[in-house]
Length: 126
Image (cartoon, rainbow, N blue to C red):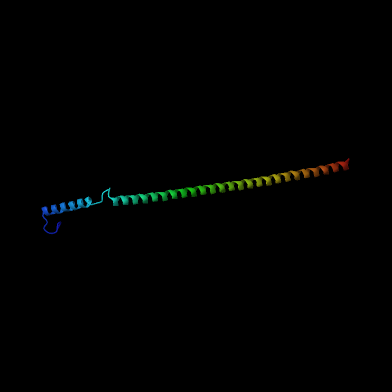
């Protein structure tokens, strides 16, 4: 039961033509580009698009500023870490140098004491 009722070919053809005519009438009655209402709607859409683009540009500028701030903070943290590392290395080097000088001084003191004992022994013997 493809077509309910007793639709003949001519009747289906007439219905199809009527539908096409109604569709063409709908498009013919649509507002034209020069219509003031269409121009207002187009201007409103353009205004909305410009505002949207301005907001997007503002967001991009804020993101760029935030990224720049983050990069500056990271550079400052890196510089501080490098300075701390240099200070720690210098402190370690000072400690090593101090330890070396104490060892050398202790060795010199031991040698001086040994030389003094040797000289005292020689003085007693001779």
